[in-house]
Length: 132
Image (cartoon, rainbow, N blue to C red; front, side, top):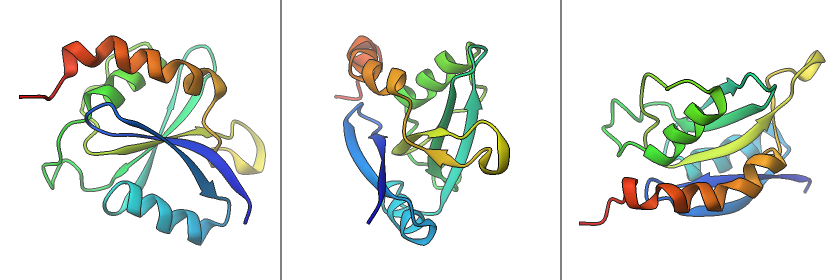
């Protein structure tokens, strides 16, 4: 089975590397398992041209899933503007195709994001710690 690289970011900042299937049906099933419900792809782009797909639970806010402050901060950083709503629950980070027939389709997580994620999470850990 052909796969591409993605990263799951949990509400506690835990990062998990994933290999998602390129087959749409298999990928949809895998994403639903990772976000604990119906998967919705939120598409974000920054002024530098960086494109980020964030797969979230479609009903995360309605289900009162825990806000994912790490993912919300990451998206705000990519956009270089605050996100006006929280991303909730575990998310899966991917890339996005930019042009042509596949525009907006998810792809492998951008290398820049993948390489910076551990440091980003560590930098926010004290502020966003959910430990009691």
